[in-house]
Image (cartoon, rainbow, N blue to C red):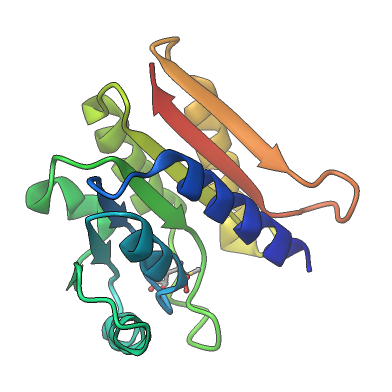
Length: 180
Ligand SMILES: C[S@@+](CC[C@H](N)C(=O)[O-])C[C@H]1O[C@@H](n2cnc3c(N)ncnc32)[C@H](O)[C@@H]1O
């Protein structure tokens, strides 16, 4: 239930901030739910995942929905800027692919590396939105590291956090990094 609430928040934020002429990026496509929303809202979406299965599942979902304005790339989000530099937003949904191998998860090391390079590149009107899941062990280390990193970004960024605070002691939360 709480996960659904967080996802609804992310979706409504995307709807408010993406236009039909924007290029968007899904850094962790998984089963493709965020990729599908980005494809519906924007001109074109690039999706990344290290698991071939995620590309298969996402392709199936996008085809089912009749969407064709996408390119899926079987590579780590660490390499996003090697493929595309002109974008409106990058969406991260951290953790592991639902109903799959829980050992293949986003990690503190790679997520931080990517956030460092993306934030040093980020320009006015671009944003990054990240859903963090501190409820599992790697997720907790990763979420703490993300919060520590974004909390120290200089004042040329606006960083916000959205979290349900009355449900659980380790609820998922959303971080939004905007330039400007
Ligand atoms: C929680 S799932 C994403 C769920 C997805 N947003 C959806 O709507 O179904 C996290 C995904 O991140 C992927 N992942 C892990 N490390 C990655 C990396 N370095 N680069 C890109 N994707 C990665 C995993 O394979 C997994 O599919």
